[in-house]
Image 1 (cartoon, helix red, strand yellow):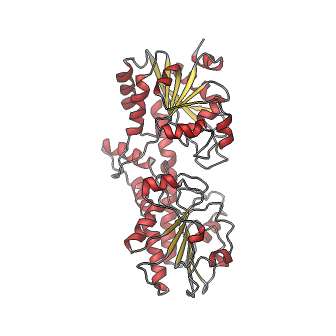
Image 2 (image 1 turned 30 degrees about the horizontal axis):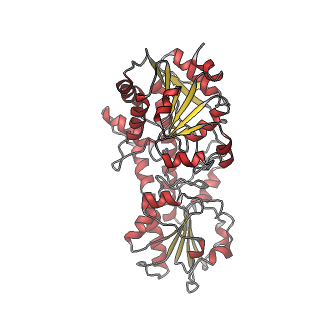
Image 3 (image 1 turned 45 degrees about the horizontal axis):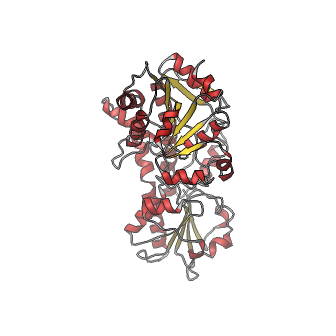
Length: 438
């Protein structure tokens, strides 16, 4: 009897190492079919799950209350499992080099409790070679076991999109890979339990790693192109969104839009790829050019806000500016690697301390990571400028009258930056508004 069949019969367990926006939904999905141990070193997060609370809002409190996942912060529980999925973040350092400490740390922890006959599958986004060249030696060192003989390794890149209720684990094709055909077959069958749209068997672990890292690099480059177009068209006094709507009538025009590129994938993965390329003597041109454009967008937006204030004779230093939305994307509580912080900090260089409001964000996380305390919507009054930075569902219904109440009534013209273009620009015409969007 192989491992897959033992999992189905409840004779073996699956573990999820890392219970964040990616790992927790995977654990909950598997628990509908097999026995699952959900491990995270963060005991406070585990306590929330045990109480039936979903701080990520990915599956909801009811799903957490009703799941059979055994949530734990005790790594000893990993010893009870034979199929392990590692789903920890892979951020970048301040110098944009890969920070592999989370995946290395998870490998050290898992290795201590690894048993013979186990299969370990990594989901963390990495550059090609990390799973085999970095993770395997750690697992061998900590376990005293030999990869290929005592345990097997695989890789299946995560494709969960935080806050996206359409493209879920159950509805997207899952790439799977293994160190040999036998491992690949087991990994494919186990993932088929939850990846209902099917699995794609990659040729090798390195191919699967590379596929993941270029998916987001491609998006990053396309968005950078849109951001550059936005800057060009603003100089021409042309509305970028209108241009894209017109161009979008062509059958093969790709529907990308300008915007802030944050989060843990699109703004990070290209650096993993270029880091590996540079170690082999190749210096990226297109990929890093796109990264530079996208990394500078927060500064560009803040500068545009300041220029618009000056154009209407509003003193910049000490100006009252509201930023609506702080998360890295709409309708999601995650503030990690948000690019809105770049706008906030750049405005600070001009002597402006913005009022920040975000009804969706994890306020404790924002305070811990950035030292920012959110305001309430009641605090958004007598403003000199308003920046709608994130298209949260709470902001979309605002009318022209709602927006007008946010401003200092002494201003003849109200400076409004609608970054995502969620409002109809025809409703915010001069002279009452100076409306700006990417």
